[in-house]
Amino acid sequence: MDALASKENAMDLNSRANSMVVLEERALIRSLLMDWLSRELKCEAQYIFEYEKLNLVANKGCVVLLSSRLLPFDKKIVSNKKNITPVVYGDSFSPTTVLWWRERGAHGLLDWQDSPGDWKESLERLFDGHTAETPSVKEALRKARVDVGLQALTRREMEVAQLLVKGSSAKQVAKKLGTTEGTIKNQRKSVYRKLGIVRATQLPWAMGNGVPAID
Image (cartoon, rainbow, N blue to C red; front, side, top):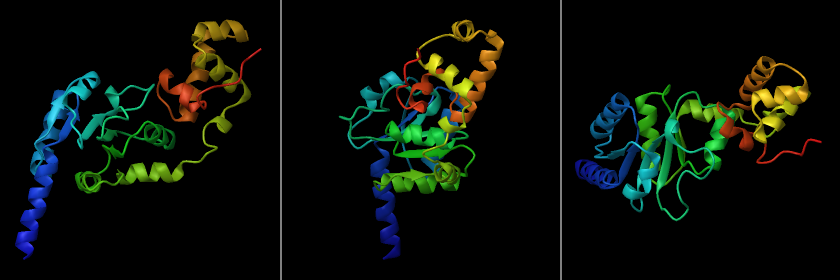
């Protein structure tokens, strides 16, 4: 009976595996990941190099592993019309970025610093229709607070962030605030660190999708 159940479980996992897609541009990472999926989860996954091609290969009910390096930062990860399960993987997820990816539709978050066993357990939960995070992502999520980020900014950092989010360059901000471009770049770095972001396209979300006008 146990042997039969194991066989049925393996067949069920294999049937799920037929609808997996991996988005990864780095050849070595892609090769290792595809090999691991085949060996540990019995998955025969497709792979693509560009996010724009996702809609061409992702079928209904598909689980997709998406490199955070290649995803857009200004919209949902996948169309709401697509009945697929997006799973974002990367490294060193902060509390802010965990919430950020969740807001954009990630059902799962996998961190490279967690073990293959953690990844396997999380993916199996995702196959079963649940959301899932590896342990370090769960820890980051636990630390997330509503007041994390903005309240950590100084008054000047808030002024700099408000100008940057409106599209001003560091040079333009420096001129408006009467300081040097180098100073603004240092303050911008501090803003990014405190908000838990890594690039300018993440700033509007971290600021609450809109900021008060500056007179």
